[in-house]
Amino acid sequence: MAATVVVACLSTIGRAQALGPMQVSVAPIVQMGAIPLTGPVGAILVALVPLAFDRAELVKRVFNAGQRVLIVVASSAAYAAAGGTQLGTDEFVDPVGLALQMGAAAVAASLTNAILLAVVIQLSSDGSLRAIVADLVPQVVSSYSSYALAAYLFVVLWAPAGLGLASAVLFLPAILVIQWGLHTHAREWSTRHSLLTPFVEAVDLRHPGAAEETRLVTGAATAVATGIGLGPAEVDEVATAARLRDVGMLALDGAAPAIVRRDHPEAAARVLGSVTFLREPLELVAAHHERIDGEGYPRGLVGEGIPIGGRVLAVADTWGRLVAEGGSPADAIDHCESVVGHGLDGQCVAALRRAFERRQLPRVGAP
Image (cartoon, rainbow, N blue to C red; front, top):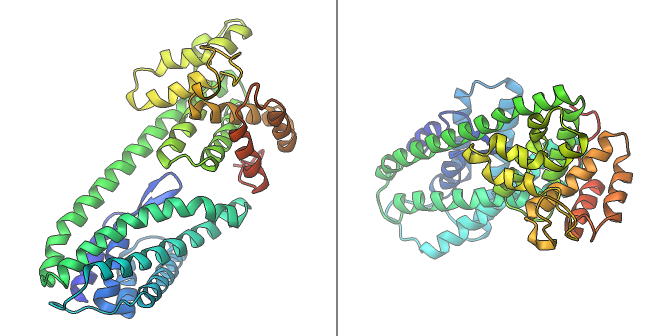
């Protein structure tokens, strides 16, 4: 118990790292491993003791404590239901059976976490709880599958392999390296996205209202990309492209409006093309004025020849522009549906409609 608590405390060095709407941490690895090693009560203590060193506001610490207890209770119940028991050092353990038991615990933990997170998002966004849960579950389950694998290795080293306390010593360096890697990745992700803000603000200075339109388009693009099943990395690329889609206007300031409309996607590539991490989003920017019927520009791509991210962005751009100009969100969707098969992709427009019905699209004038 003492060794597991120490590992749990060290695993919380530095806060959980935010990657978009999700937060990732190595603490769940230790918490899941504590279930077969220390039992449900011990696992709850392992989850709660590190909060004594948390400097967050009291309300956040209370929420985190409740969240951890609920997750541990749910995963402990699933572990027991699958036949799991508390393990002792040098005890013979069926590795396959243990994997299934800890897998059941991971599923219960991920579903509980997804529901709790969805409730928080729903209270702040007024969206559909069921739809938010459906969107979050794949992301959370993906994270917890990695947590479960690492926790399984920790438990195997402790009990079946007979290393006991030594397994904690062996596991600590890996915990600290993983935590450092998460911190570095999150800091890089945050830096990349903060670099985009000045460009959005510059476009808004030249074209008042552009920032609000960008917010609407980015929110819609994220909802549509998630709705058609794109992975987190692809969703992030689409959202980045949505923020950058009009940056090329800065390079064409003073040109005729028709030229600006026609050339601003390629101008964006000229302005930011040397920035390595923006290359994929800029490809989507270049494609977001292509049309399904091949009558778009700049390359006249047809149907599925248009990158899926470009098709998502085209739908979000059309909806966001109409709403920013004063149209109602519902009428903007009706317009998008009226040009399916000609200008816009049907799958993406259907995802836009679902997002609207689930109240997942950004609201006009919201902060």
